[in-house]
Image: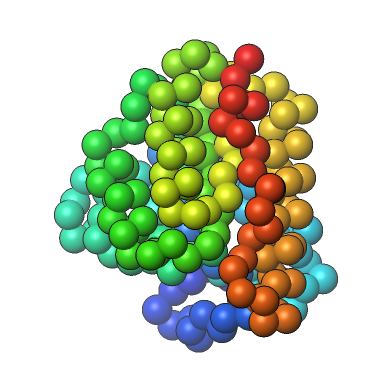
Length: 194
């Protein structure tokens, strides 16, 4: 797949050919989210089509109009990567954005990837991870998480699982299979802990 920044000038998304990713990250997690995107691109390089991506700074979600636009884009994406500082709960603007795109997705399959700051203690990240996992379950999406005190081996395992899920998703769409990401590919939020 060709890695392409989604812009208004880019041809529209082609179901069954393209794979779309929306990333919404803070400054502390954008590099790790981009690493996941690069890894997906590397593992899907032999597939035809485009790996379309967008990057939204999490701070713009404070503006209602931009939050709505971001929710529309996330609702249409195959994968959503959310990069957050670890904490007891999601920031209010992020929670509102997630609630809105979950409403707009209407249960369409996909994947939600939580990327938490690596230096955040696992105990402090559990609240955020639990909220992300619950959102994924409510949206019938596969859930993956990295960071929040997790070890490098667990992060690598998460990325391998994510690669595999993306590959299955592309193949399912290419062959007209309903649904999307295969069941059972979720990495429990507890794997991101100590």
